[in-house]
Length: 440
Image (cartoon, rainbow, N blue to C red; front, side, top):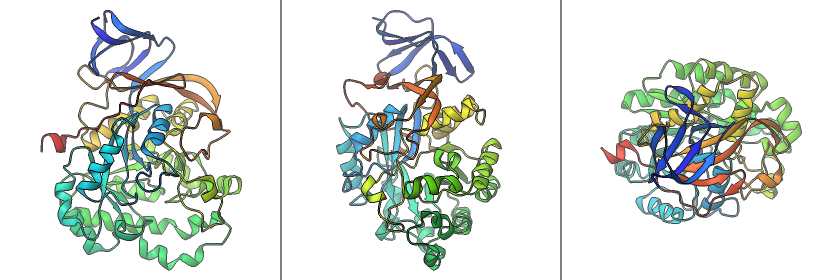
């Protein structure tokens, strides 16, 4: 057979726009677009849209050390069930992912167990700054992650001198959790026991804005590119729009979908995350700046906890929610409701990640690229049911939500990882390759 896999009859979203063409896949890569010969397997995609594979650039899969919440196998199953072909996984595990040995351990754990392709962030600490230039260039490493707030122990880097030392070591783009630790510590009394609606009062807009201003100034002084994660305030996006030469940024589906006035009364601590779900006005402001083109990517910040942990009275309840499986469905629903174009969705979930992070061979449907494809039914109307969720956490803030647009297939380097809700034959995820690592 000329090809291993052939997809026929679908609307394929190519760099030049959508076209009804066939795709031929051979040896894990796109080998032909248009006229495609015989293949070992043929899948009809009539009535479906074929998108470049979705990359979720912020997930917490909790392994090692916290596997009662999630592990690399269960988290990646949730990813491919939701149409995600690749993930960047975060370093706040136990032990932290802050050394070459820790990166090697995660890569070994992922082999044969992760369903999607993957890369792992190395966490910056107050003690490993001198090593980061070397660590960021390890194969399978997504780069360096800084927690300016919302973390504990060594992964908290809160002081300007320490932040400057981290930014001075290395060249790749650094991912930032921007909340100001000093302001949040000074505002601990704003938390109301038993009331998670006080979470955004405690971790207020200014906590985020102070940190974002600080890291922009430090990055400019260091001449270092940064990527500000899960931006939750319109004011930050306005500020970031003036610094696009050094700063890219991310928003999450949760912040684009939920409004605190409704979410906290209905969901309680299930709506609790860092930075917080804020008001409807904040949500609308994020959409304004998204339509202005400021956010570069959308990441889920998938951060699962068990239902029992989340049921503890606030503020003992931990912050974070599952999200990797609902990232694409929520965005497809926003497309259906007219808030987002499909072209912009592709930019935010595949092409944007390739551009921002220099991913090799992914982010578009083109000959020679990895055959990472997300097949969707834009017209499917369905409800998020508990039985569909694959995360070990077993819950979602979006359970019971009616959506339009559904992932039908997830193809990772030519292998069918998911089709119509069923998993493929084996977990064959591999490390993501980056230009900065491959070519210096």
